[in-house]
Structures are given as structure tokens and as C-alpha cells.
Length: 82
Image: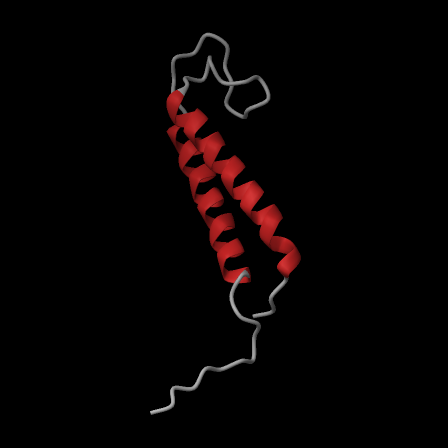
């Protein structure tokens, strides 16, 4: 896998933002969501749990991507000398 170090910071930012969005979906009802969020319905008391789960999974996935990009460059193998 090729390492692209320029992806680390954007992946961390996107991952954290998606986790915050997931928390908003879990905490607020559809009527209390910001109007630009998918699932906003004025006056509704329904919680969009599936939207929250999707945002959480994507946020964790972005953080895992950033983590894998911080590893050593491909092609290097570590040898254990005994």
C-alpha cells in the first residue's frame, strides 16, 4: 500500500467532524437537528439512529485511514536478529 502523508491531517479532521455529527444525531431529535443535516424535520421527536451509526462508522474509518498512513513506507521489512 502506498503511503500518502498529505492525507493524514484531512483524514483526522474529517474523522473527528463525522464523530461530532454522529453525537449530534444520537443526542438530538429530528426537530432539533440543524436545518442543513439530512433528516431534519421540523417538530419531529424522532431520533435518526441509523444516520448516527453511519456517521460514526465513517468517522472511525477515516481515523483508521489516517493511522495506516502514519506507518512506515512500503517495501521495508524488519528482520529479527537472534
